[in-house]
Length: 577
Ligand SMILES: Nc1ncnc2c1ncn2[C@@H]1O[C@H](COP(=O)(O)OP(=O)(O)OP(=O)(O)O)[C@@H](O)[C@H]1O
Image 1 (cartoon, protein in one colour):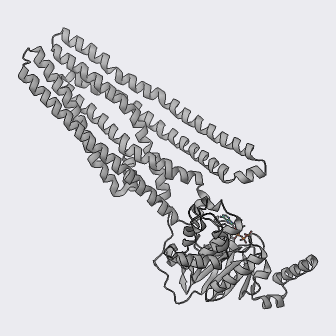
Image 2 (cartoon, protein in one colour; image 1 turned 120 degrees about the vertical axis):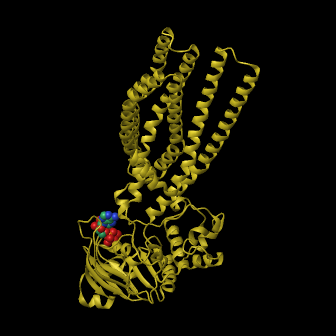
Image 3 (tube, protein in one colour; image 1 turned 180 degrees about the vertical axis):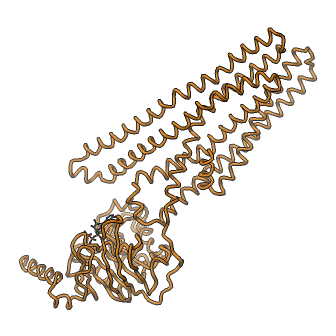
């Protein structure tokens, strides 16, 4: 329990303090509830003593009405606080989780499936909110009511107080076992849920591929298996808890017959008034039902720890460290200084890479598939941190600069163009959120996408589906080029930029890039050699090592891998002619 409270404080921070008034109001509500029983006992005593007058009726009615109204107010305040604070806590939590995830290197996503992250951001956050704001308060009410009732029972007759206390103590181990079981089975059910979400996301995202390869049936059966797994785990969880919840409620139900037998005995030996006997029976019935509520709430509250642990596992991941919020460099010269890198910590993907790219120059990265071209560009964008050596911009180590400041200085057009589920106008404005419509249109013209945009039904206000699913690959790429043009950043990273364009488009786009590249430091990954022959430097990579470095002429003179590739391409073109 102590761990859980510490975890709640770690996660909700100052917001966990918002719970204190709600918990106090719950205690007050339970106290008022017990008061009503107290008043009823007084009425019974007065009736038994035949001193129940009209004046007393008025007094008791007034007290009961007052207590009732006070309870209404208490519950209204508590409920409105819960309704207000709950969504605030979950909103802040989702934002802080999202913000934290944003600051992590991409290795985090290699180790955490989309299904797991999805389950944490949705299920765990809403479980945390619901359990914390509703179940915890109900649990406090049930405990407080039982304690107050126990005190009243003691006041009426200490023997009844002891009887209720003993029953409660007998139930505690059962309650503890069901809480522990619930926590364990909750973990298994949660991981089955993660599995379902992963399969669901894969099924939706890969539906085109599955259809093309006739895999819809097989993939659907995997999803079906995952759903079956979830059903099994949920049923197992319910069934494993059932005996303990039932035993707990049987033990607590024993309160009523015990009170009856004990009361009957005390009545016969004349050590108890009949009226006290009836009052004690009333208390036994209400405590018994309150303890049953406790039995079903406690396992739920214990599962709060699972949600806390999952969220803390994300929040505990170390974000990128940096010293400076802005990049203050006099130029955009980029240098790789003995850089090595491994995604897994085992296999070296880049080995001792050193080269310099001066501002205003274009460096083309070429080499066989898997040689490390994309990795170089990813390291420059600080999607990952180098494992050896350093990368500098204008002499500053990029690890000293905040990832936001770094990417603010880069315009990127990667292979996988992701467009938002928003209008074309807003998708291009991603490059410069405060750009005017005229600037957007000018960038779109330069990227050769204005013409196709204006033919669309709503022009620049046309909505693009999630990921850009409603437009063609070439159109998606040209919109992302317009974004890069609009951003006009000092560093430009291009990855396979012209692969989805036809020859006419490619010429026009190339002209737009030539304008964009002026006085910028450009890195371009291209498989077609004719697009990079004019580059200032060509870096040929092989298995993570620099094989050749120089401009087209220099590399042709050395007659290495690059020269062979150019020769092969020439011959292929001649064959084609
Ligand atoms: N996220 C990742 N986790 C683990 N290994 C990775 C990851 N991304 C790439 N790799 C591995 O790193 C190596 C270099 O990959 P990279 O994508 O940089 O090559 P590339 O030269 O750009 O290839 P291509 O031309 O096919 O795009 C490959 O062996 C690849 O399998």
